Image (tube, rainbow, N blue to C red; front, side, top):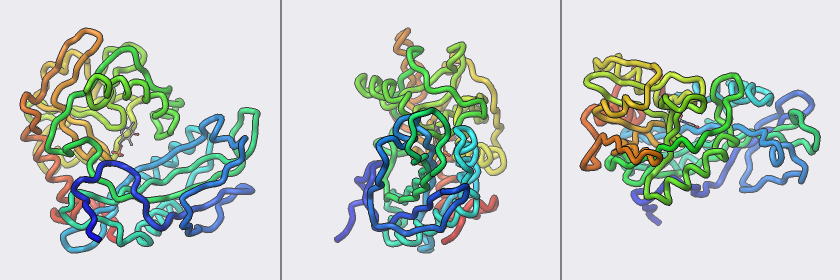
Length: 339
Ligand SMILES: *Cc1c(COP(=O)(O)O)cnc(C)c1O
């Protein structure tokens, strides 16, 4: 049966295997291979009540040469460690993380979408506290699970269609735990109301201002924000923006490969009016061009693309990043792990 990858969205599509590892008595056990799609949890499990959970998202790509490449796996391993530290879970050792991810990809090798299908293999590591408890404290036992799903674009149309975003002062997300923003499910739960309101208004995603002053740009629901002004790549500097590996990669490409200037700094809301192009970026979103940001509190529209087409600089960045991920452009930064 031929799989229609072209029309896949960003959803869960089952694959046969997942990889698991338990933490008990102060240490990590051996990796286990599972074909079950379920976990059994105690009704008092820490994660169900106190949301002690963190996750990661990375991708494997099938290149023109047939080889599979995982993009910047070490960066995801390190970020998961910061998330673990932030909500007091045992850190997953980098080697353990890498082995689990590589094993999950290899076991499901046949599910890595073909080159030029527009799809890729999304890898989702998740860790949670499983100890039964009622008192609020960190769990003693944890489960790490890595599963994969062959996915299409996060936003409809992928890179080719710019979409409108919603901005409102009504919404905040969870606090960043003192250690900088971390990738935890609790933050996403806090963003569901904003995301739903955006969809009800026909806008594709909610866009956040800083929670304290509501004057600076932060990021989108599940992706970082960047803008282009002339030949400069501009992205917010804030401790409550999730440090996107895609954003860091694009900034490096902009500066070192495309001869652009890069500014990572606080960005005033009013500056939106001065930008030539804007995009949301992340592993799932890659680059999703933003057509406009609609301030629903003031009814002001910041327009970046009148015809819903991506801008020229966004296109250069997108093509360079994809080129490295698919093995078409020399990986001079050493970002790919070839499987
Ligand atoms: C994961 C995530 C991103 C994107 O990060 P990447 O490392 O590029 O995938 C951006 N914002 C939030 C809130 C995220 O959780």
